[in-house]
Length: 140
Image (tube, rainbow, N blue to C red; front, side):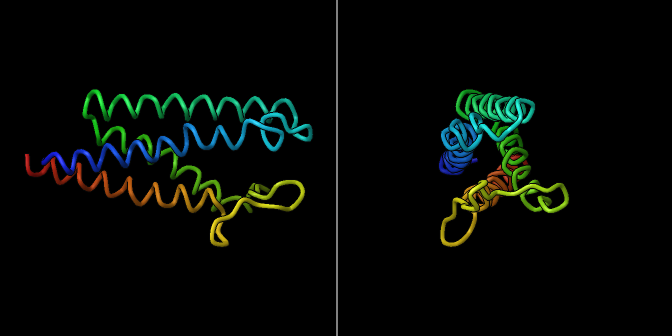
């Protein structure tokens, strides 16, 4: 595969990792999530576990992409993480979930939930990265 395609894939992986490994912890290590006094300790431990897991997998994806050029694997792992958020969002009514804070507010962009916008874009780009990777393997 040509260098520009490889750089596109690496950039897509990096963008998605920045969202789930840095932006999400930045938005959630505060009193709305990790230190929320209305959350039970059991819920908080799951939140912190999820943040550590996703950030660690993000570091792995960056290493796979930039050090090993394992672009398909890095793309798939990132797609699992970002796609899982979209699945949880889509299924929220079945388990009583919500992206709204206790005061009824919600972080939005252009009237859409910010997580859906960011992770939706990441999923689309990661699917593109995977398609580029399959094209590379087919042509190899």
